Image 1 (spheres, rainbow, N blue to C red):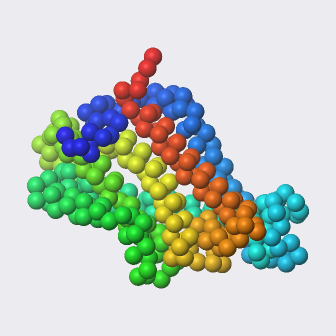
Image 2: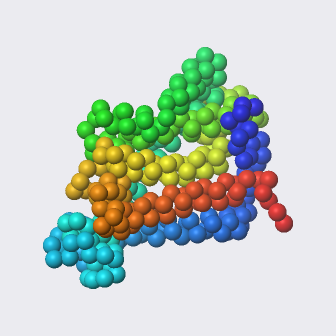
Length: 296
């Protein structure tokens, strides 16, 4: 078995745990439960918050520029133009989380497809696909992303596609190892003997049996996408003002670190909470879906 498969917390030869058992394990993981709760609050706040608070993200209150948090009508203060920080954080969360979830979905589709084809067919096809994966992995992700971002017009759609294009390789390696281990199992051989097509065997038989590590990888990919969007927007290549994202809010705040530190602290705190919560959630899902963690 490849080193990629050996690094996984469980192997495809082990049966997936019953749903109620996995849920029981997940509930015992307190940090994962906390992470799930924080993610729920962030998502609900980003979706519903802009409709609840009295200001929108573009409203300029010139009389309260640089208002500190909890010292006036603006709960979390205002920025250099007098815009409400809470409103911008909620709208920025809507943009950053939308980019992260969409990029995760696209990267998972690419990674699962490449990994499943490479693992099922093996031989020259599998070797060529995995060498492509290895070649792309040789480049540091952030530098590859910045190089690609410099070549396209910055925007919501382009940054989403660029993040997805630099985040599918790890998924492909995991799926390739899982599919390669599963393709000789009895159920896969039986489907082939009965005349099932390759596509049916790969995507209806093999991939569903490798769903546990795929789910964990998807969760961690969301955290990675949030960070990548923040990096690129912070450096000016991502989401462009006046559209708010947590990354470009940090970019705009860097010249006010000494005079108005809350302009950087607030978006930095939201990024930290989101990324940490998704990592905790991924850890909890890994433990919950690991058959060897079953205890009486």
